Image 1 (cartoon, rainbow, N blue to C red):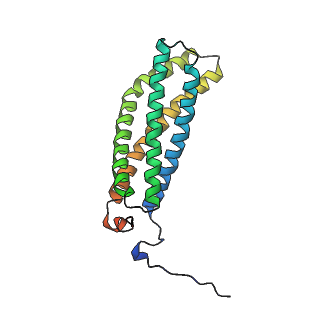
Image 2: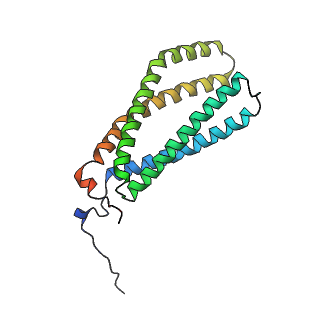
Image 3: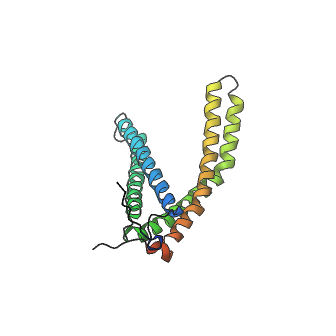
Length: 184
């Protein structure tokens, strides 16, 4: 029995490969990972908040961190919704994701710049701590891991800025814009 296949022309925005779609999928996966991380950290802070007295300085600091975790969680969830809308090629999601990608690139640039400005102090403090931890291999490994994590975060932010700006630009190109459909 022959298999019937319906062919759609690629010019209409058919199922052809597009790098911007891969970038949107990656952004969706990273936002989902961020949601899990912020949620688990918020749960940890919530349980730790119960330990301190309501008026304690530590309790106020935990509330502040909890507020930031909730804000980041909501932003990551919004990014998931926008990415899902773009994956489904909904017209409302394209301009919103363009703005979100540009804002995220600016945030990566600002936070990466702040991390880079603090790198010398962090490196100096970690080197001094390594010099003092002669016998404790576990703490030395943890400190080296923290340094590598810091550098990895800097590199990932540096890579993310041009990718996010490219995605924001690409979603505005007429050929990509034509692939999105408006609600009926």
